[in-house]
Amino acid sequence: MDSKYTLDKKLLRSAFEKASSSYDQAAVLQREISNRMLSRLEYIKYQPDIILDAGSGTGYGSQQLLKRYPGKQLIAMDIAQAMLLQARPNLNWWQQLLPIMRHHHYVCADIEQIPLKQESIGLIWSNLALQWCNDLEHTFAEMHRVLRIDGLLMFSTFGPDTLKELRQSFAQADSSSHVNHFVDMHDIGDLLLHNGFSEPVMDMEYITMTYSDVLNIMRDLKSIGAHNVTQGRQSGLMGKATWRKALSAYDKLRIDGKYPVTFEVIYGHAWKPPSRKSVLTPEIRRQLGLID
Image (cartoon, rainbow, N blue to C red; front, side):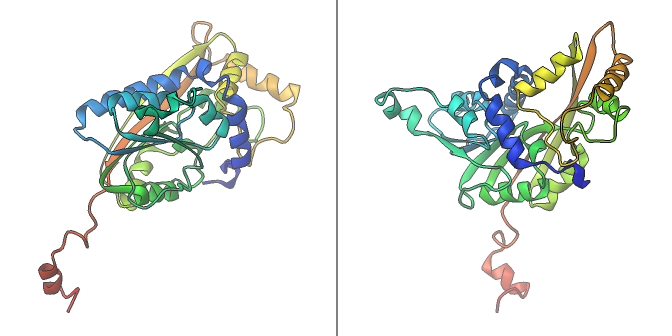
């Protein structure tokens, strides 16, 4: 990946901290994609004992998972402490003793460095968080490490055509990066296999939202913490001339007077299989010369 698209994690954390109070009102797309992921679980007959919601935000997905898997333990993990505070119910001391709350835990951490024990999780659920990783291969290695044998990874993320209208418009205004780099679906599938996952299932769909003006687009992105935090971003405020060029370019993309915003949504799931070593009996290993 071009270094100009490397994410500044300190700025990323700060952006989500600031967006925590406005996130739920603006995160219409995020909830819809979470619901579509949940519907995919209908076709997977699997009962995890411990669930990790990796990139849990304000907790919408966590709440739905607890309803689907009542009595199971769930760990909500997010890079922004303020997001976790929004997700955590404001309970009295006696309410915190309820059985359901004893099964719900909160961890502030980056999903690129998961602070959990090896093979401790049955299901990793990650809705629209992987696009905030600088090293997706390492992230999948971390997820593989903490998953139990026969555990399931289920995720959604954004593909390369996401925000293509913004990218195209700003590209005609200057050479700075204004939109994140998004990984292709096929490359994600390859990374899953390379990191030991089996039977990856990938699919993709386009969701297009429309806005009456560009300022509303930028306002919504800011409300969910989707700032430009790439290393190649322009330092300082954008000049008026650059902004006018970008707006003029975006005007040409209007459809029926509305500004389109495209999201390429990638869905995937994969399993952690037994290691090759673990499935070989001592007799077979002896025949293969692996032991004396």
